[in-house]
Every structure is written in C-alpha cells, then in structure tokens.
Image 1: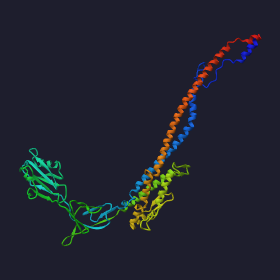
Image 2 (image 1 turned 90 degrees about the vertical axis):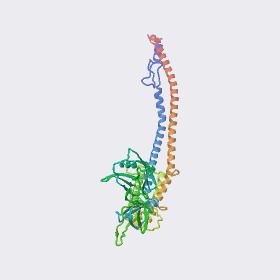
Image 3 (image 1 turned 120 degrees about the vertical axis):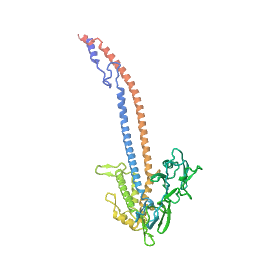
Image 4 (image 1 turned 60 degrees about the horizontal axis):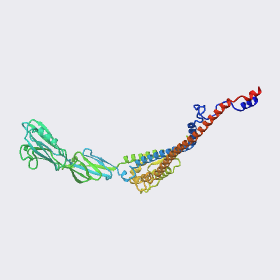
Length: 489
C-alpha cells in the first residue's frame, strides 16, 4: 500500500506554474489570462502588413520624386520660354532708336516699325496755350452774377454772390468749378489793383478761352471776353499750333508732342530751329532712326543665359553624377529625352534666312562649349547685326527660326496634349492608385486584426479554462493519502 501511494505520488507532478504566452501582467492564478491577445495580434498584423506597406511606401516615394522632378522640368521650360518671347517673332527685332542732332529743338523716340533712315526736321513755331490778363480791379470787390467760361468746345459756369464777390473769390470759384477742362485762374496784385490771370492748360489754336455773362445782368461784365469783345483782357499768349516740317513736308499740331506725323515715331518739340542767311532760312536738324542693336544683343545674350540655366536643370534631372554614383530622378525618362532632342535639333539647325553666311547660331557667334553650354562672341554677333540685320532676325524669328521653333516645341510639350502633360497625368493616376492600395491595406489589416483578436480571445478563454482545471486537479492530487509511503512502512 505504501509503495503504491509512493508510485502515484511520484507520477503526479507537484503544483507548478503553467507555461503561457501571457505578459508579466497576466494573472497566473486559475481563471487568469493565458495569452496577451492584444500584443500577439499586433505582432502578427505587423508581420503581415510590414512587407506590403514597405513596398507601397517605396513605390509612393518613387512616384512623388518623379512628380516633383516633372514639375521642376516644366518650370524650367516655362522660364526658358519666357526668354524666347523677345526673339521668337519679327516684332522682337523691330526695335528702333531715334536720335536728334538738335536736342534743344526736338527729341524723338521710336517704337516698333519706325522707318529707319535719316530725316531733316525744322520747327518754325511751338504749340502754345492762351493766357489772358484782365484789366485792374479797384476797390477790392466785383459784381455778382453767373459767368460761363469755355475752353475749346467745353464750357462750365460759376456763380458769384455777396460771399465771394472779390477777385480772389472769382478765381477760387473758377479753379474749383466742376467740369473745368483746364482754365487756371490766378490773382496778381499790382500797383494799379488786382488782376485776374486766366491760363489755359491746353495748347493749340482751337483751345481759346471765352467768358460770357449768362444771368442777363451786367454785374460781371468786366470779366467777359470773346469774339468782338476783347477790351476787358490783354492776351499775354495766343493759342497756337506747332508748325514744323519733316524732310520738307509741312505739319501742324495742337501739341508739342507729335505721334501722328511719322509712323512709329514720337517727336517732342522743344524750340524753334535756328535761322541763317538773308532772308532768314530755318536750319533743320537731323532725325536718325536705326535698329536698336543694343537691346537686341541683350535679348540674345539673355536667351543664351536662359538656355544654359535650362541645360543645367536637364542635366541634373536626367543625367548621372559619376562622382556620387547618383542618377537623376528622370534619367531615361522619355518625355525629358524628347524635349532635349527637340531643343538640340532647333539649336543646331540650318535656317533659311536668305543668307548663306548667317544661317546658324554659330555663324552669328553663338557656339557650344565643351560642357554643352552656349557662349556668345560679341564681336561676331555685332558684325552679323550690322552686316545683315534681316538674316539675324530670320535666324531667330522667321519660319523655322531657332527661337520660333523652340517656342513652338515647348508650347506643344507643355500643352494639354503634350508629352509632359500626359506623363504628369500618368504619374497622378499612379499616385492615386497607390493611395487607394494603402487605404485598402489598412482596411484589410483592420479586418485581420479583428479576426485574429476573435480567434485568440476564444483560444485564451479555452486555455484559461484548462489552466483552472489543471490547477484544480493538482490541488486534488496533493490531498490524496500517501499510499506508497505507508505500504513501505
């Protein structure tokens, strides 16, 4: 009996803690949590999600980099295209300068399309504005009533009453009147009394001043002036048109700034021409109009600088840096290679300029350096502009011209149906697809987490139940009589 009890005792393990995957905080007692479900599920979900999320993240980063690079390329092309604006149409070469040999008599400015050449200009009279000085007013006061003043074809009225019936009051009323087209009134205090000075701001024979009384009274009759009524004022300056000639053709103008005599040219008349001989004869000055090669040269230099900047960007985006073993984000990109090819074709093309001498960029002094950038030989360009200005203009702006072709190519590439626009749409679609895939993955992982939580919670409950049973049995076995030991005794 004792030996049997001993055998049973040795075959039943003593009470030991059950090995579990629970955390340190899990209860070891019967009925406690056997599995840390949250931690286990989190680890399983992370293990499932991580490789897929890493793949999506890498793809998203690549697409984001490509989108950024494409935006940089578009910006660089747009900036370069802006520099073409001064050269891609014939109007960019229709820039002229105007010089006067008699700057005290006239100056001039030339706009697009001004006829180049040299012209004799003489000025016999300047346009002037009328100025009238009233008779002196004694006593300090004037009458009352209403005056209508006119300048050219525009009239306005002023009313004088007992509150402003002084020369100063009349001048203030004129200057402050609504609709005044340009008559300025000033009071001059002389030894004989106060004088009213009326000055027109508008030159020309048609811009004369008239003053009439319109209230049927005579209170202000001393200030009226007009045809047949000039006794009240002395004309200090007459309303007069300018008189001048260009290459023997006579002109008149109500203004000393004249833009209608010669297409594209504005004359500023400053004085009358000197005279010589008997009888006196006007000595004309010369107006010289020539192409503005200084500005055009600057525009060509800006074009070269802009290209070099663009080229640097293209190299950065699509090239390979051997010193760092780093490829540009658009290396091998078809869109970038396509626009590069178009640009190179335009730069090195032979253009039909009507000249066999000046028909390439190199022929006008724009050459390629060892690194692919462009440079300008100023002397060669200057010689080309002076030797055959038209050919240089055609080289850039004519049909098939360098700047015209580049502008057309870039416009097409950046347009709605352009290669870079299509590429941008493709990248945007890929980015949206990756975002959708990432969202779907999150949804799947949430479902997996819920499923695993349910499964392991059920398992946890089962294990907890088994643990309770095991604990109970262990306790029961511990209370059995020590049969084996008594038998031996």
